[in-house]
Length: 193
Image 1 (spheres, rainbow, N blue to C red):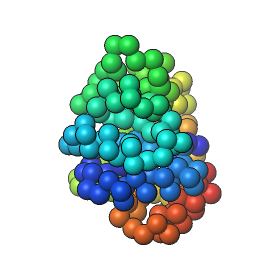
Image 2 (image 1 turned 90 degrees about the vertical axis):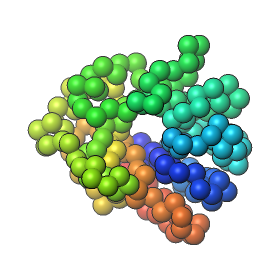
Image 3 (image 1 turned 120 degrees about the vertical axis):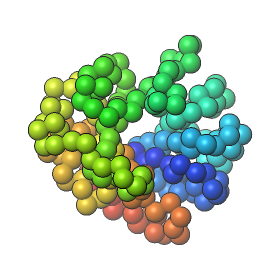
C-alpha cells in the first residue's frame, strides 16, 4: 500500500511543515502532496526550498504547477482548481475523484484519489459518499486508487477489503505536534501497511 500525506489547507509555519514533511518521508511514507490552495507561488517555493532536495522527487504539487520547471518534483495532482497539466509536462500525474465513474476516466495516471471514503476529519460536514457495494466496484478499476477522506491508522485494515492501492491522510496527521510525536505516528502508520 502507498502512504500519502496531504498538507493542511493553510501554510502557517513553513519550517514546522517542512520538518513534518521530512519526518513522514524519512519514516517511509511514499509521497507528500503540497496542497495549500490559498498559498502564493512564493510561499510554496519557500516550502519546497525548506525541504532537502533528496525528498523533492516525493513531493506532489496541487497548484503553482510551473514550479515543476524549477525543482525535480514527484508529480502534479489535478483537481477542480487545476484540472489540466501544463502543455509540455511529461511527469507523473494524479487526480482527485469523487465517484467510481470519475475513476473509470483516469487511465494513464499514476494514481487517483477517491474521496470521501469515510467522514472527513479536516472538512466539517464532508461525509462518506460510498457504500460497501460501491467500493466493491473498485476491483474493475485499472488505475491505482488511493483512499482519501477520514482515513486514520485505525481504518487502514478496512481499506484492504477493497481494491485500494493505498491511502492519503490529512486530518489524522499531527501537523502541529513535536517532532517525536510526528515520528511515532509516521512509523506506527507505516507498520500497518
